[in-house]
Length: 509
Image (cartoon, rainbow, N blue to C red; front, side):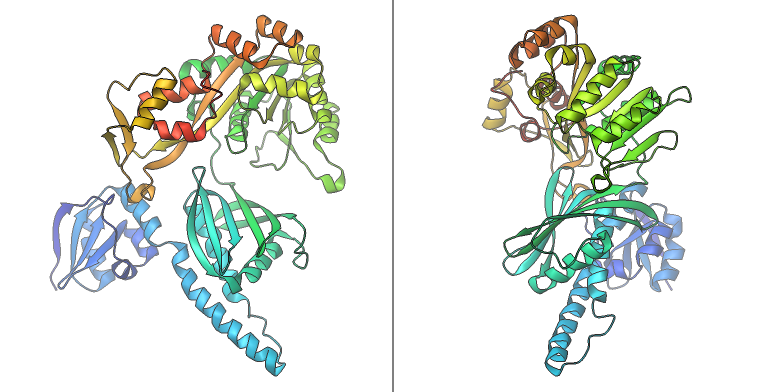
């Protein structure tokens, strides 16, 4: 037998392993040896390895000569995860389902009973769908009925991607399987339902929130994935610039008052709130939270899960917390006037309150409380700071390149009074590691507005949003747009991504 160990390098950003070659080794062995077969040649198998010394073990595992090419260990592991996708097993399960579906129809005509394992393919399809979503860092799975198919999409880094098409006949069975896992009523198909799944996926504890709603053609189901094994972010990891992070940390040390995290759904407010709790967590404080749902458990913090069916609402839960001698209270979301009023009064009676609110920017959060019916003097006296935020996708570091911006991008930058980045505009060209999108992961964009005496006066006088915003800027607040343009200048993201992710109010900065 001939052993080829002449090492050369291979760029896995542009080289895609042949599926037949990858199947010769299998995922478990590939991870054990940190190697991925790339192609089958006439006299050998080309394999990407982190360490050429694994060539003898590879030859033994493959049973044929190997030619090794060296690549970065992290790149190989990422390629293994991408190549041995869980969804590659779906086709086999779909064929099994269609075959059993034909048997069911024949059995129905013959009035024969179905077997207990008739839905086994559907069970596997749903399991594979969830497994791959976690591997792909998806936050949500969308299962949508179409004319003759079931479309499955993953939301990755805030953007939906088509990942799978299932036959239309499989839709009701897939929906029923998800409902069974979530403890929902599989018979009820005319009304929206909510449910929850707790399971282990590849040794990772996962909580899944499930929501179904009737649409034309069937039921649409959305699964929100909460990976319990993911470490919580601390404030320095959120993307906040050092100077702003220092000011925000100082705000968190206030003995009482209310700090609001503002932004739309999916802007990272909950992550920031947990990072804030990490700054406050100590044995000297009684920290209590009320959330819907409790996304991450913290061993030293008392957390309450909302359950409206048993009468545990935000307002009622917050009232009970006040009888527990709390120092710090986290209210997952201010949804109604009752919750807002209790939270504000808690901040005025010696408690430090953290909460989130749906608002476009920091100044809007104050007006949102006023619109809910909270009196001006209560808002002015209780809120100590507002942190507005968004998430933008980061340019993939493996395929970043300089480019000439379009006329639209230049016009957009000019409309905000921004200068071109000194080193030129950067984007991701698209590679295997970012699924050809040019982006990988996200970072936060923040706008911190401490509530100064001047801003309190404007709130008491019912001043419009623009006056509050302009005064905050004069006092040194950097807006969401300012921070986003800084990220463009630093080559972290692109003008197009800023335009997609951040709401611009009439060009106001």
